[in-house]
Every structure is written in structure tokens, then in C-alpha cells.
Length: 240
Image (cartoon, rainbow, N blue to C red; front, top):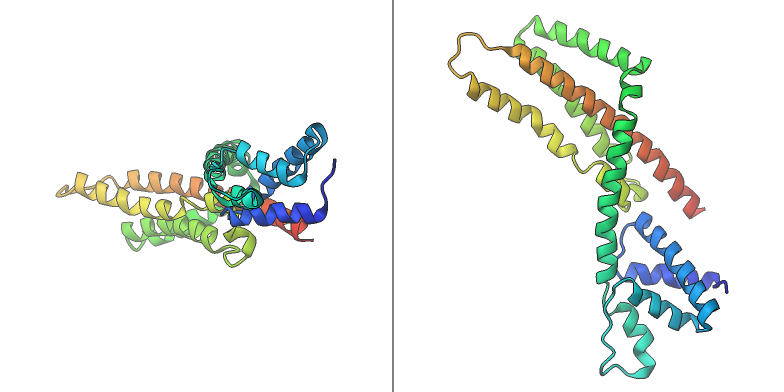
């Protein structure tokens, strides 16, 4: 038995009231719940309210019926607990992280050997070399700025769009950006403490590390833009 558009809208609002804040998580839950409710209504011959309450409890949301008036069991039962949805969201976080990680490494080599990236590396190499002529620190700073710019673009790109702020996929895609921007400074502090007082320092180690960090960071930006386009398209279709 198919449920009505009004009932689907009711389920969506019910999820919002149960603090399912991310639209992409809510969309997946909505699909699961609608299917489960329709199955129960068809197979068990029960009403929409009864089916939704059973599905709600089936997600692990607790419901204590004691002392609740019979006429308010449905309303109170739907909003008494959202612990099951919180567990579902935490599970989705782990799944999304694994999905992003696999996609990152699957697309790493094709991106690194792409013509566009090779041109970017050449340009960065030229700027680093020119900066190095002034001082070693200037050369290193050029590479570090490449990393910071890549991560900063991830943070601000589409930053004011609603679908990004309310998407769990998008939030996790930029979750490590602030951490990555700090890594070069930690490495430099460790390097300076390790070679403090040395007449000559092996700066080539820092150049190699920062170069590799830029490669990983720049591909991270490319991966982020792919996720951004995917979920912007989905959100646009959802709103249309």
C-alpha cells in the first residue's frame, strides 16, 4: 500500500523534529522508513500511524508507554526518544569516511599523472626555485602556501550554500582541512628541534616532505570538488 505525499512530508518533518539535521542522512532514512511503513501497512493491515510507530521503535528508539494516555501514544511515541537515529548517524559517519577514503586512493594515481596536475607541479616548482634564490625559508614557505591554499579553498568553496552546511558528506569532506594546514608547522618545529645547533641542516628533507604533502593535499581538493558537485546535484534535484 502506497502512502500519500502528505504522509511522506509528515515523516520528513518527524525526522527533523527528532534532530536528524543532515539532509543527506535524512533522505536515506526517509527512503528506508517509507518503504518499511508501506510494507507493514500492506502485510499487517495496520494504519499509517501504527506502522510508523513500529518502524520508529524498530530503529532502536526507546518508547515507555506507561502513564501515557491512549490518545497520545502515537505522538509521544514518535518524539520520546531519538537514540536510534543518533546511532544511525554515527554509523553513517563511519561508512562515509570509509567511502571517501577508498574513493581518494582510487582516484589518486589518475589525478597525479593528469596533464593539469603536472602543469601545476611545474608552476609550483618554478615559483619554489625562484623563492629559493632569496632564501631556503622562502622556498619552503612557497611549498607550504601551496598546501594551505588547497585546504583553504576546500573550506570556503561553496561555504555559504545550504546544502553544504547541512550535509554530513560535505562536513566530513572538509573535517581534516584545519588539521592538515597545521602539519607543516609541526614538522618544521620538529625539524628545528632535531637539528638545533647544527652548522648545516638537511633542508632537502623538508622540501621532499612538503612537496609530498602538497601532492596529497592538492588531490584532496580535487576529491572534495568531486563530492561537492555530486551532492550539489542531488540537493538541486531534491529541491526541484
